[in-house]
Image 1 (cartoon, rainbow, N blue to C red):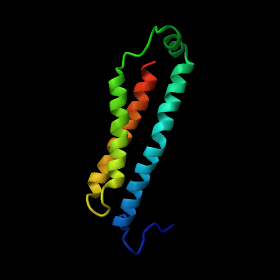
Image 2 (image 1 turned 90 degrees about the vertical axis):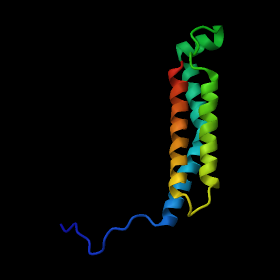
Image 3 (image 1 turned 180 degrees about the vertical axis):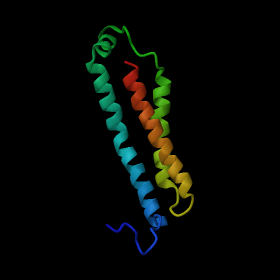
Image 4 (image 1 turned 120 degrees about the vertical axis):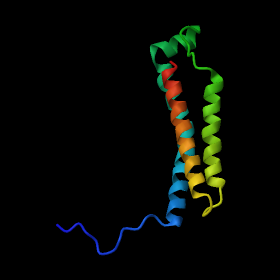
Length: 115
């Protein structure tokens, strides 16, 4: 089995990188609300979430401002990654998508761990 190639393997072209970054930003924005809704559904279906909802006992110790901050940070970073001009600032767009996904995953984790 010959695993060598005659031509060197090239890295992604700039246009392909821009498409990839835009795809991850769009996917993150499309999954932001389902992440929040499903996380809360899981929390409220448990015993502790039900006690909090019905009697106000055993509720989350995570402040609501942290949840809102993570949500708005994920939303703003995703929109910034999409609004950023293509071809310039590719690394900045990639970092914006990383911040977006980090904030989104942190939001889901905070919701799930707070119950």
